[in-house]
Image: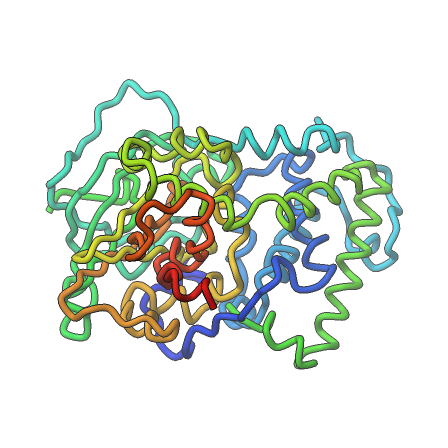
Length: 219
Length: 211
């Protein structure tokens, strides 16, 4: 979606302000919001792309005025409510008021280290052949889906060069809507600063994105 | 995205955060009562990312690459198994690529669409990495962003920005500081800063840590 999250090239956000000796979390609620988000993936049954869509799918003004963990937490609430795992009256009351829905598994303390260490590879086997090879010129398609996509607006319509074939990976545009993993070839595509930003671009800069084959066409 | 995380220290949007704090607490109670989360697992998750997983991991990888040419070659060729050799792997680091800085090429990593970051080697991202100013300008004005960090590159140095739009996570291998010949990996790791592994900073010099 062309939402508030798609920030590449936007103006007016001011300078970057690094915080000296920044703590990992700012306050206890951030710790709990982070951990709840991580722990609910298993019982919630959603995937990473669904989470990302739940985070970005809000008015841009709202997205930009929220802190990072506020966005995470709002998305967690949304996904829980969509699946009838939690209702608003329960959050308001601060207690469970309705019977729990059965869930497949929950994250036990004994599973934490294992689960984190295992992670979740997105690479998948395929018997298809990659359509592009390193050095090929490609154009990022002009797509504007209302749903989740990982092709940022600032490269759409622009011509770049295939730098590397990464492998065949879960396709977020399908995975986010529950349409399945639909694995596709993934490439690192490099663009010249001038191609992306015209005369305002830094001539010594190049930008790359990792783009799935359905985002690209020969140029 | 707001960097209010800074501001709330100064009492900026206090009421809003109190509201969030209350909702987080309420939701945790509801989820616990329903049996969906085990609070002990939550504590472990927090402890892992507060105490165990952080930029010190990445610093060890970088120091090893500086000290051991064969390791450096393996790391640049296929980083995920090379990093696993040192013991780091997993969530948000399933597919890691290491980018080597040289006098001619400076690499810088961003995620313009959200906050993708190589957790096993750098931990959770700092607020600025997730903020609108960094995500908007890293791709269009990299030298301006570097100036915000007090870093000036030679005019002729090429800058390469890696936008982490898929599940590939990028780690910058900064240039080894001069005057560190013969240093142990442990000592070299003290020079490696988090920002130098994102591409928004330089490693410390021997002089910096002698202070």
